[in-house]
Length: 388
Image 1 (tube, rainbow, N blue to C red):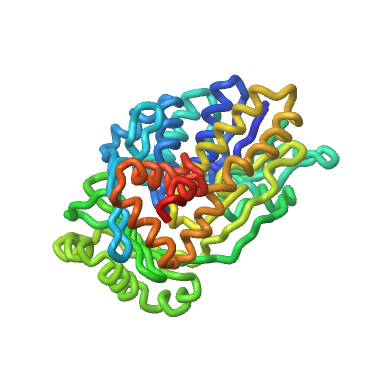
Image 2 (cartoon, helix red, strand yellow):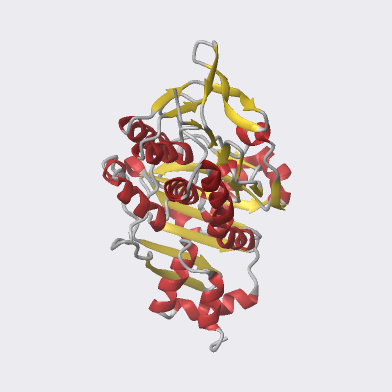
């Protein structure tokens, strides 16, 4: 009945299903969670991701939720404050940070409107095989009934702990140790833009989202996790107070609207992107520390790449080979940059570079282009070499 089965209906899976359904594929989407459930997330969509939402025709639905456009940003460390507009992509500088229960539902609904069959509350527990080729999935539906469905292609978009990746035998490589742990919550009644603060070993970010709320996240080095988890609220507030004192003062008159969330399981790896009859998109195929907030944007880029490969290659196997060959080139520069930033080091050499950037509007714009994944940080360093 289906050409493609997509396992996962969040950012990676729903956007993949949307694009493939529009291309004429018969698509089934299976999602374990109920529609409209929230998810641990930094929320932020960089400008390249926003541009894809616009091209896909769903950006208006995102902005209609009341999620504010974020066209300026600041980064503060030591005596350095870099402030300026975000990079421009397709004529707009806006980034957005919608709540995930809204964004995921918008994308899932768009996939359904495009013709995909979307089923929530379904847990995939097995793959069907024809020889060494994946040929479908086994899952339990909302009533617990065992169901099997066949398709020429199974897309694993089921997150960092991907069932599809495990069952297909996708190998991990470029694995790096965990670098940070993170805690965050939401605040109401605080004036904030997209703000980032750093000191040695700690990082704080403020990201405005829906309903006048601001996500405030605090990052620590991974080795502190066992200590912090027992006193998470105290450690979180101490981090904000020490790393972003001006933001902390604004929070004193604000209202915390949700409990404190946290994770110490920020894995860093790539997995084999595809094999006979299967392919991975989003966190299922590549996961990295959330400090640079690249997850959603990278999920969109992978979905777009897979759809392009399927449209351009002469046959399914050729498309999967092309995707496997091109995906790492799409992701590796930002992966290395994230690993560097997530060490949370404040080196004097880096501060010298940042001091030069803060006094130059053109370098500031290029710096924020690099953080958005539009510019290789090595190119920015080349610009700075004469002054350094």
